[in-house]
Image (tube, rainbow, N blue to C red; front, top):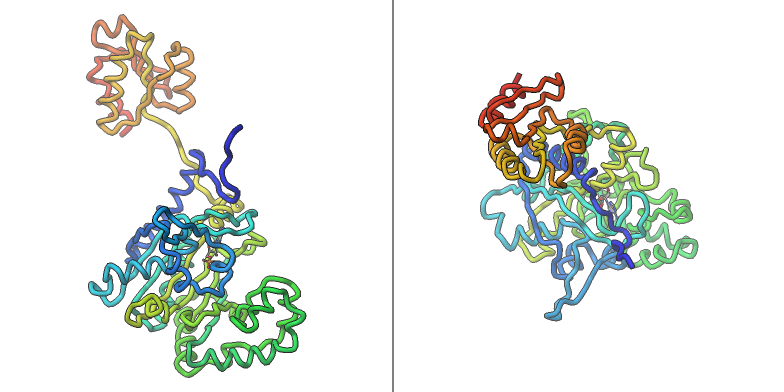
Length: 421
Ligand code: AMP
């Protein structure tokens, strides 16, 4: 019986990998423009890092992690997201010693035991950025601009940027109490998850996507009305910077990250045509996370974009580029005895940067000409016994149909001239 891939995983097949390379290239170009440098961390970490870095009361940690014990009895977890790992690496490698502000990005697979559906997988890929070191709102604005510019560059308009501030450990407890007062009488109407959130993490109740919970929490107090002076100034400044940069945003008081180390800015970018899985980007400030991971208190902000969702959106809008797979030369030996000469020519051409292919299936010339057409080859170099005896080949220009008998060592020059013309 055939062994299939695990549920919620997808193969990226050769016909699709060009799309991935395209998106990754646009990401790399933008990151170069904004001076964010790539960081590559392992796909698994000590489980404890995620317990501390994501929070034990989150859905990710409670229900979605791929955790296993290795042969050395260590508890390891496939990374469900990458902020905690970047912070771990930042501290372990003392990146803070080199510069006051570290601007980092990553692209890679993440793993969550999610319910698979269109746009939601168990192995998926994120592009994310993290800026560690600045507490001012300008870096928040830069990070948001980077996400917006990337999505625009890919051709996606119809984007909505939602913005909120979740306060800080000074003002949030006051809000938390207000929210609990509001929710107290409603708890019995909430879903079982939200009932347990009520005590442990009441702000997450606002985030619940269940219809009943959304209904019950209409009219809940807004955190932006409870912000301390510092958080409120930060939020106002960020909004004015985004306005200056002509980025539209909508305030969304339900956008929360209910943990102590998430502070101030929270944002999400949605692409409505994707329907149920319309969130393409989520991010926010985490001024308490570096200290939570054992470092000196250091402010930070970042976001993650789901690459599969971007691909779905680009497919839907027909925004993916068409890739040409044309080659310069197809080398066609007429018979197995000519294979050596053909192979030598093929190697020479490739060493000189010419895209070339030959027949590896040991077929006749008719089949080889069909192959050459399939590759849209500009030339076919036909190597017959008679020609080879005089160190010559027949070079056919597939566009004009003209055939020329030329010396084998002139093939490269001839093709280069023609390709340049
Ligand atoms: P998060 O780390 O949960 O804030 O997610 C950031 C982004 O990653 C989301 O906006 C999605 O685009 C993407 N994402 C999160 N979970 C999944 C998943 N299970 N499958 C595919 N994409 C995901």
